[in-house]
Image 1 (cartoon, rainbow, N blue to C red):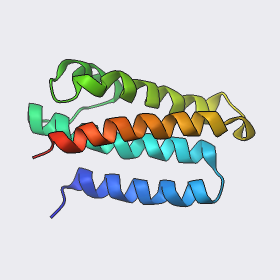
Image 2 (image 1 turned 30 degrees about the horizontal axis):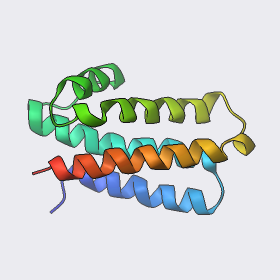
Image 3 (image 1 turned 180 degrees about the vertical axis):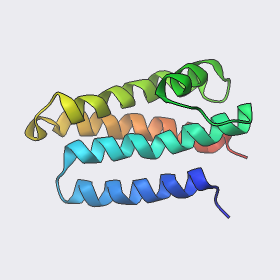
Length: 117
């Protein structure tokens, strides 16, 4: 049975696929970030015994923990792209941002899934 984080990751990823198909790139980038955030939280919770309390705690822990450190910069960049998609770019300028987010997502996702018990 999947953990709560894994179920939420799958739920968010399913929404991402719908948003991408419907051409909502700003929300697709945002939901893609939140999908991978669930994987980060699961790995950190397994390693630390407690989940992160906020983005700052999550970023700091991801940079420090051996299981997440190799992809911590890609994760933080994906968070930054998500923020830019929501607050700083027009939806019609997001094609390259979405493609970059998808590459970062794949990198982080593959690494974190390989780290899970």
